[in-house]
Length: 456
Image (tube, rainbow, N blue to C red; front, side, top):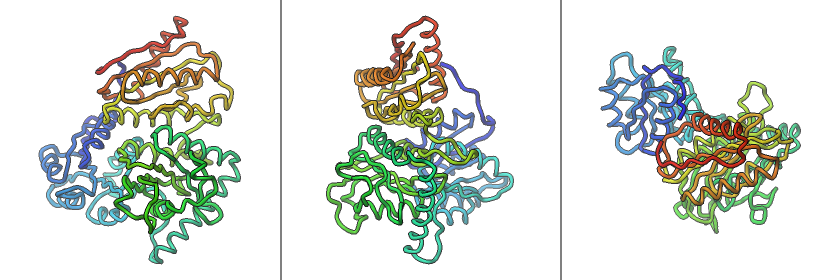
């Protein structure tokens, strides 16, 4: 299997601190792939012990942990260590933690959940900026927390979101179609009952995209979700309710909704609404699930600035290479965490598809954890993750059949991994399967080359 070159100085040491073992392992593998020397700790006490003997350059710590929390850990690092003191980055799902973390000596602060690419950028930025010592708050754009009360803050956030949405809709006639496509794609990827895109328009928060028009019609205000979604827009951070029996966010009892995951939805870095997963049964989302939701909600709409990050889709509706590789990384991590099987197919079309010929490829293949996207102008890939190698094989077969409806396929290549899925970087995996595809093209082979492996 090909390996990727290290991108970071091998002497840069990063200590990751969090009570979530799954999250630590994902971030550790990600940073090690970038060339960093990484160690992990499950709490503040363990982190101090590791740091004393290992002297990291950077400590990235969660705030909410049992025992010694992140606040105390920051204080101890700043007081117990002689110069040079390790740089500290604080992470939290609560925006209010930012002020205290920075006061205690953190150089950076970011709201959780953090995307995989965003986490790498956060680490790089912290190491690069450690020398000048300037604090930096790497939090999403959100309404300012004035002292005018909750009502005034919410009104300001709503007004700003509504203005940004209207400007965007004037320049993108297919915006509503795009939001509907996102809702349907997220429902099929996660297997949830319903997915909704809620946008502020004409002063109110209404459904702009839905995977279940019968239950959640376009244009309607989802009253059970209004308070939750408004809090997400105002605070700019995700809110996850695994079981609504334990809380009452709407001021009245939930009727059929049993779990909700709601993340900020952005246009050109301005929070204009929320992307919500709704289910009739309790659902516990993993950190990788939240990463997928957050990335999709921040990148689904195309940007209007040439200097802004790329959007998720080409004009035809197919995922871009950057978006596909991001989702691929999250899905590999999910398969490893859940003990699932994973597979990827790459196809070489006889001709480049015309615009819109594969528009629904991001949502149509039926199978949880399944998406398709362009790798370049001449190659399209599709991945899936599920429990059971037989089910996975059928999902990939159905996916290839769907792609063949749009254009003739010259050759295809496939890799499948039985559980446990080995640690794989998205770029190395794509390079590997592309090598198989090159062989298939050279041999004029339209059949799929398959490899099943429990370890690599």
